[in-house]
Image 1 (tube, rainbow, N blue to C red):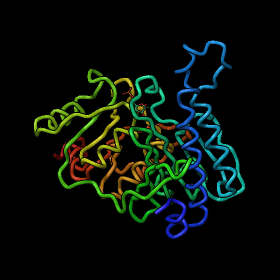
Image 2 (cartoon, helix red, strand yellow):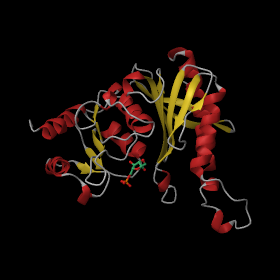
Image 3 (cartoon, rainbow, N blue to C red):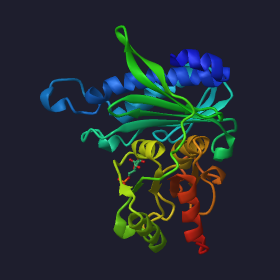
Image 4 (cartoon, helix red, strand yellow):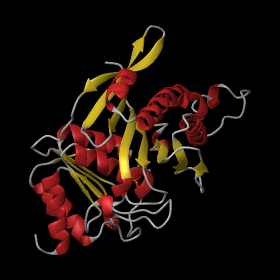
Amino acid sequence: MKLDEFLRLNAPEDLAALTSSIATASLTVWENIPRKSGVLEAVNPSGEVQKAIDVFSNDEFAEAILSTGAAGEVASEEMSDAMKGKGKIGVAMDPLDGSSNVETNNPLGSIFGFYNKPLPCSGRSLVGAVYVTYGNMITLTLTYGKGVHRFAAVKDGPTLGFELTGIDLKLPEKPEVYGVGGAKKDWTPRVRRFVDSLEERGMRIRYCGTFVGDYNQVLARGGIFSYPETTVKPRGKLRVLFETAPMAFINEQAGGYASSGGGSILDVEPDSLSATSPVYIGSAGLVRELESVFSGTG
Ligand code: F6P
């Protein structure tokens, strides 16, 4: 089934319009990664000065989202203030997650949260969320609060289009993998203790350095991803509005749980558009276990 048909049957009209515009823009962003990231500069010295890929992807998505008329505002990791629109939905986005990984060709991603309250607000006001992976496949994973569904970009005649590849995705029972960001020397003692316990039970480390890519494998294999509290960043690195809350919403719809260390990420009230929080996201049992280790009851 094609994405647009799925959206027509399953999504509220405004969220369908937003998702469809994001899907189209994501393909343009992907096509432009080599040119706009400077990868071609070495062999194309007389070419025009390239716009940074972050700015390019921000502008592409913002324009696509505002053109639907469904967004009341668009906030982005790349902009200090939100752009205003005429609709009702507050869209928060990380237009190119992990862009420092462009040169190494690790997966990149884009994250979108659809909120029904003025931004900033907590993840309890999310009515939908989408993430795109640019890896060996371009996939688009979405929820509107009724399960998690996935699409992959496939060639349809001369152009790419998204086709349904997964319905009602759930984290597997048995957790297999984990990935933790930051430098180990900066982790707090309780984070180290918990990670040691993951290693002791034979879980395998998997870390690519892009939140979307690291979370995506947790959804497929079961386990936990964290950008934890550290001694240098007690409030973590990842942003609540653009990154952790939308992914927590998707993860809960897939049967998982995401914590800030002291409760659900969805309850974190960001005090600014760019507020951060530690994040521990993945299989519900493991994340609950971390919370009890942190509270001294586990
Ligand atoms: O927020 C940007 C980001 O690239 C995330 O996608 C990723 O999880 C994190 O930073 C990686 O940070 P570090 O390089 O400190 O492990």
